[in-house]
Image 1 (cartoon, rainbow, N blue to C red):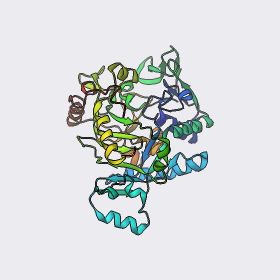
Image 2 (cartoon, one colour):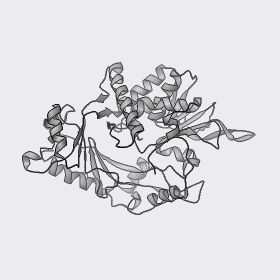
Image 3 (cartoon, one colour):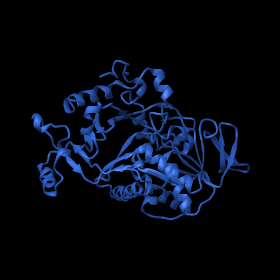
Image 4 (cartoon, helix red, strand yellow):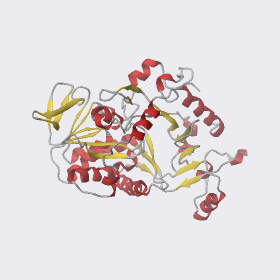
Length: 405
């Protein structure tokens, strides 16, 4: 089996090996052996991050909540097995509710303390309402990816990373069966034969598997890294300063914030381009080089983040996964979608990917199976891609001066 994969494929390779599959190779044009998944050392993917919030509070979405709770248990086990604090059980404070009962309950449970006013708003006479999720925390994303890769390699997987040798240019199809994939071609001109090819390439997946384009698309948010002065860092340690969300909702026009690092959430940016397989537009990820050539990132996230820091730190399509075989193409499995929630369930997602390959049916393989998009679904994706306010090419850009405090 060959996998075109980022962190998802790396973790899933471990599960395939655990379930008896052999000769697994992981391909990626990113050289993760060199960058170690760090965004500060050249890691350029959704997985290459410093920290990610891990929580299981999904409201009425019980299947995802149950899966995330299982994943949190496995994150804790990874801490024990690796000897490193990959997952920090710091909690998650969500500031937007107006219900004193939450604070009363926190006092009764013994949770009340610095974590409930981490921005010192009350002592400055400012309002504060919210809820504290004591089950949540943060994962050191780059270290977690390194550990998942270590597990896969120790189980027998091989890696082909880097430009050229790790970059796929397309599938190899059987000579007399064009709908059957028997391997991949890479940019260095080599062919790699396989019984199965799993594509877990994050937002790039619809480019590799065009059949996904009518109902899976790429959108982007913003992350801002703030260098905290040395003398203030004790205030932001995980044991006193939990992950947080401020004015955060999926449809917030002004943009909610989460941290740390700081994530600005408004209706997400799109990068519309013409599709090679259909008349409609699709949205694909922009590379670091493209963003740099335009002069900088969008300006609005910087402005709102600075305003938030000045006030609160004054001294400093259905969003479901698609995990299934591609109906029209034998030998290809896709693992994509999920609107960024895949990392939360990284340690356990691979179980259900292998279930798909083995033909086992359960709640999650049914929930994430291939969908036939309706006309409304296709229209909704196009409506999300095309508006000027979401097209990152049409946003005011931040200058070098804007990046200064």
